[in-house]
Length: 442
Image (cartoon, rainbow, N blue to C red; front, side, top):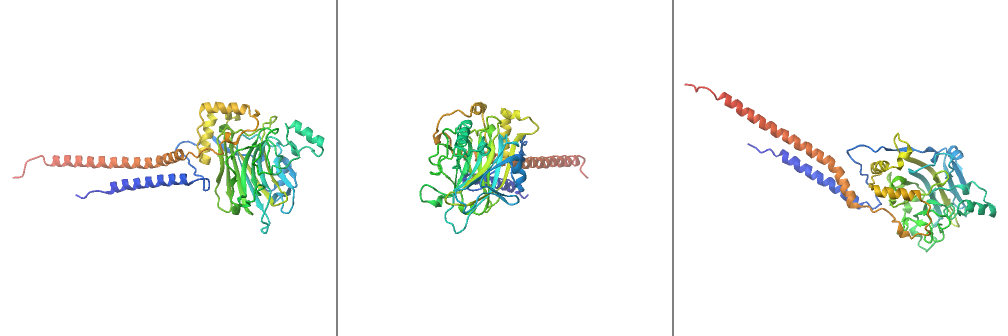
């Protein structure tokens, strides 16, 4: 009787396939240092999160621009709007000029958990070796510096008193006042300190809370700023060849509910995928307007003696909300767990905020404007640790769910085949036994 080796071969094949998939997942996680695609670990079983993405058209900009700008946006500086082409914040060979756009709060700017995607282009004369100064992406609670007449010194002093010290006529923060409260992503295209201009462009992430003490220092490329620089270990380097004269996207993901901030970039020249620049889960609260609870979205650019053309092409804002629930639920621990599930399913990031951490975070949000003076940059980590072992274990677990299901089905089928064979043998023996009963022929 020949031996049936099919079952053994199938088991070995499944084992090899399992080991191969696990090896692929683990190596991709360990090799992913922010220069490749983020690995999205989406549970292959279980329900979807109740939190969903909701477009915010009031805080978005797209062609034709003038329809939206006339309703929902402020424009400042030397900004030029070409309704069906682009919004030029600065232009090449136009020295010492700035431009900016900032949402005005007439529309819905009450954003807590959200994603903002900026589409922009920085270009210059190919014959020019050096360009400057750069651009800035802003989320701020203050936009009064664009709505008031600040030409006189009296008006500027009055505005400073009413805004707790904001220097309305200043444009050092790439078009914005250098001590404007809020979150600012400074994309610097010229290095003021030192002669190594090969290190440009680069990005820094700054947080201003108190205008009296927090400000950006342009002359030192942000190094001597009293603002809190979140990327405390050094500048975030960007790819020059992929950035110049190309359409680029920058994405800001902020979930106030779970204190999560993530910043990604997408180079059109390199492909349709996001590269992570920065991430943190520290107790990071982005200031809101104390009267309206709003956060205004903006983008600015600045030319000095050196120049460049900065064009804003699109702003796309989405909010994250619990389906069919009042927004008051978003201040509960139930919402926190749903937001964590959404973050994992939508962006492949895993968080696990404990109840006591949630309580502390609520207390922090309730007192966001406590003045503690200048803080050392070490008080806030530049990024949440990647937790590679944990991410690898989670990835293996998710893939193992399917593999275990396949193996389980296989062993069930083996058991069924074994029982069928045993049943046939028993039946055959009984039939033989029944036929053998009787008298032998003479």
